[in-house]
Length: 138
Image (cartoon, rainbow, N blue to C red):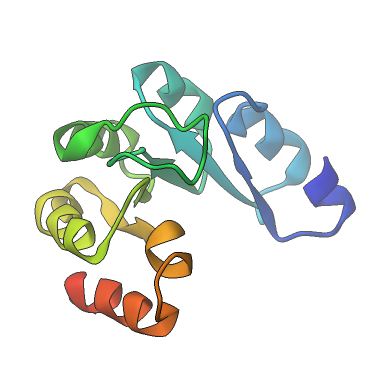
């Protein structure tokens, strides 16, 4: 409701938030909705989202309640379960991890990665961002 009141283009919902389908009913078809998925129990909550963030794929300290790393195999399985909704991999992603993710998970519907620490924690954030893009083949 804060995103709507602020006139935001969209919102990203966590596992403890209102299900995406409920938000869709009052936000309308043009409002962008993202949803977090980390295990099978969260799949239903993401139904109706425009994209899903799946993870944490690797261990992360960026978000204290992110949970345990799920790994690339589970990322692929969850991305397939969310298809055709596009997904991004989140959690502990580095340039090396981004390359592994895209080589193993792109066919499952993973379209990219969401990164915080690998860029903001780097001595040279611009170069870190470019390294991740290169690792993803972009």
